[in-house]
Image 1 (cartoon, rainbow, N blue to C red):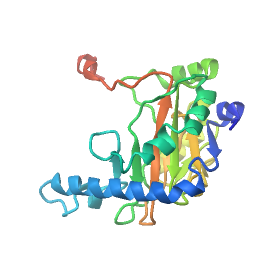
Image 2 (cartoon, rainbow, N blue to C red):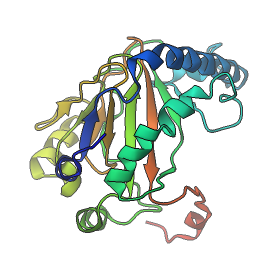
Image 3 (tube, rainbow, N blue to C red):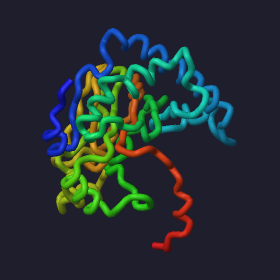
Length: 248
């Protein structure tokens, strides 16, 4: 499958239809429910004093199942990795966007789930940029425009999903005055220029981590969405140096 890299560079994201083919969706859903059932046992066991019996499953706004840790993935559920994370089509798309023949799976392989009760506003608008181990945003954007993306991330729903909103092109610039005004007033509702990303089951959105985006209302509507990313480099999450950084 050929993808429009120029559009990705301009808009900050691409919608890819049938990342998971329709004939593989039933098996993918079955495996993901098996993984979730295993994680629910862990969450119940690790619940804190005062938590409900289900622990995180009952308290989180968006329960997230991490799949790269030991336990969830075995022979029975390996198709979740094989049919998405390292599928030929997935890696080929990342290859085209990253200009890297061997893109690495670098961020937690996770599944984002619907909560047991509604959480209006979701995450609020944000960029997936943090100061401890990344350059200032303007420098990241300049590097993106000069050299292309070093990282791409995905949302791939197993059921129809329009939770993700994005401001197209915002990965190329800093926040505007109007955006700052609206976000300071209320970052938990739609803002000017933001659009929902409409995905059917099995579709995917691949996007830069720099755009202003929003995981909007988290409701009890059934949601099982795979999330994570690929990069030109390996993943080594060692932030021990942060203890030696100067205070703000």
